[in-house]
Length: 607
Ligand code: AMP
View 1 (cartoon, rainbow, N blue to C red):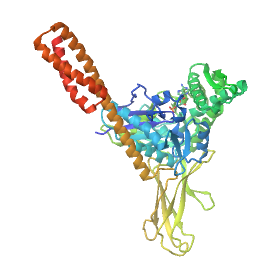
View 2 (view 1 turned 180 degrees about the vertical axis):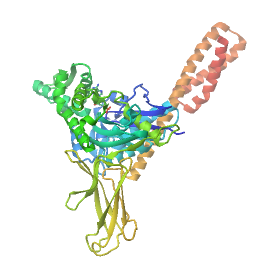
View 3 (view 1 turned 90 degrees about the vertical axis):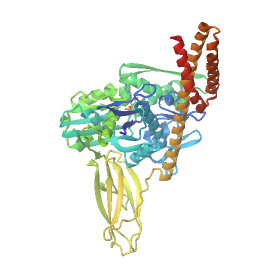
View 4 (view 1 turned 135 degrees about the vertical axis):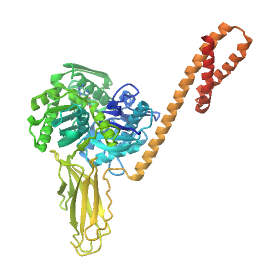
């Protein structure tokens, strides 16, 4: 039976889980870590690095190391979010052919789904190594607040990585699923998810028979640990400017070192009350003298620098509660998700606002991937699995842009998905054969961000007087939160040809090309790894045979019977060494059984 993996594709870290028997477990990567940094780098020699190895070289290769790409996924280059990323990122963000954000790495310009696909591929390998079989299906999580473009782009990333994404699930919902097994039926929980790049909150009711009903959700895709780090960086830059009259931001490497040090200090301050930041030789001044940065950050100062960010997250919680028609006292449990929830100030604030200590029964870094794996298994109806019924909501209103540039809402925010709404349109001109409609999604937060999902045109309408043609357009949101639009002529019942052009997505041809090239790179990597493991096996056999041969020679002396055998073994050894150096995989593989036989024979002499 094929297995499905659950992937939490995070802004800072990603995590993969799979169902092992009755329970889901997170799989450790080759370095033994249960989460993998969501970082991708290209080295000077053109080698692609993903995860910890990318993170380790980020300072010396800042311009070609991508982090927090999730903040750019499905975004237009001209969006304010990309503008803000442009100011902070140490890598180069450029405009792609569809007006979308892309990243220039060495001589390549990569789309964000391609970057995310590198991370997904890495996690796929982690799972395959663990399971010992290929993995094809995945459930990937996204922030509840992701719009259609961001969901589509995440699905595209999965496709490029060679994964069939059977479901996109909202992160807080996945966390609730992982928590749900331990929960009291009928309880109402708030999932407070403060991750590296995004903040999400969902209010859920855990009903009988594995029903998870989302009552309300709210969030901010630009509020996360990165913003907290940035506040520390700003403070350090300001202090340095006052002391040395030098702007640290003008140097990419200095910026990256500041960012790393800021994050480290932030994490330390969750357990201790002061943290020393020491960055020697961070920059040179105009006279060419090396300057050093040395500061002590206290927990109190960190809390002062970030109080408004935490307050914003609480406001969003209250918004979600209001949407759910609930009061703070109606919440039975507050579940903490995301690395940032380790910050004491966040825990204190939640305790104060909800009048109870947050629940600590789920692992903040692992529960999202675990919930995704559990949901995946339930979707495939794996043997003996209890069904999970997810009644999620769309956090964004769906509608169309009116002629005056306003917004005509068709599906209000917080509507349970899947859902379909139909609206009729009539032609506004005599002989009109084409009608064009712009589909939009609108966030209900204070920014009221309005995102174009695409414009579609109804073509081939019959030429009639104005108002005579009535077209029913249905807008649906599926269980993945992905939008589809269909149009039917009311009288003729003929489907009009419509094309929805995702405003920042990849074309089918581009996707296919990326998929092929990623599959090719993966096959090459797997091949290289297989060769390397054969080479290592041969090498350890060669050393063993050499050792055994030496000891046999010293005990057998010039025995002519063994002489021929030893000469034969020596010939195999010489050949293996030559092939091992020359990395001839095919021939080396052929030698492995001979080496194994020689080792066996020599072991029997020794015993
Ligand atoms: P996630 O997206 O859930 O992996 O969360 C990652 C964010 O959590 C990053 O901004 C980390 O710096 C932050 N984080 C991880 N550990 C801690 C900690 N002990 N204290 C404060 N923040 C942390």
